[in-house]
View 1 (cartoon, rainbow, N blue to C red):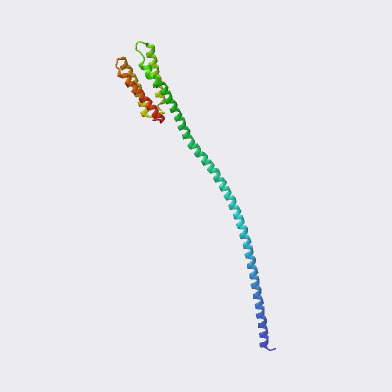
View 2 (tube, rainbow, N blue to C red):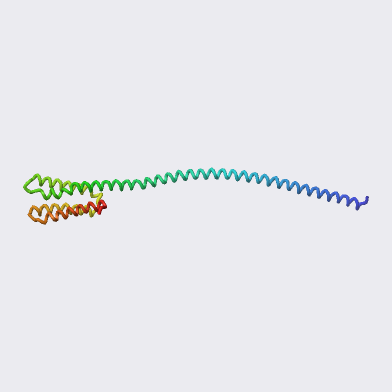
Length: 196
């Protein structure tokens, strides 16, 4: 065996050994890479499922919390809307009651005042009583009536009293003015009721 042959045999074995070692390294590298990829894929899938479960739980919690908050806000809004509506309803009811009271007193007032004779103290007292009742109802109803309505009611009172004085003095057109004042009163009540 010559030196060339020994070197060639050594190189052949070394080359073969190098190929085997390289192949083993590549196989091991592939196996390690594949194992790491599989482990990473499993870990990623586990992380995704945990994240999905956590986000579903958080989303359900937020939905529940949002539903509770919207129910509370809706109830608060209903309360805020109901209070003014109830207040308007009560004011309207009191206004109607005041107008009905004014009508009950004011309608016959003209007859009582014009039919009172200065000689009969009882008639004068009744006329003044009904006048004072009407005036008291007007004053207690001022908060429910417009400023114009209160002024027109005062005018009606004054016209009835003026007509009474003129009637006692013998002026025949006093009744006509009193009736016109009464019609103005009726028109006012209709306007306030919204029936024109």
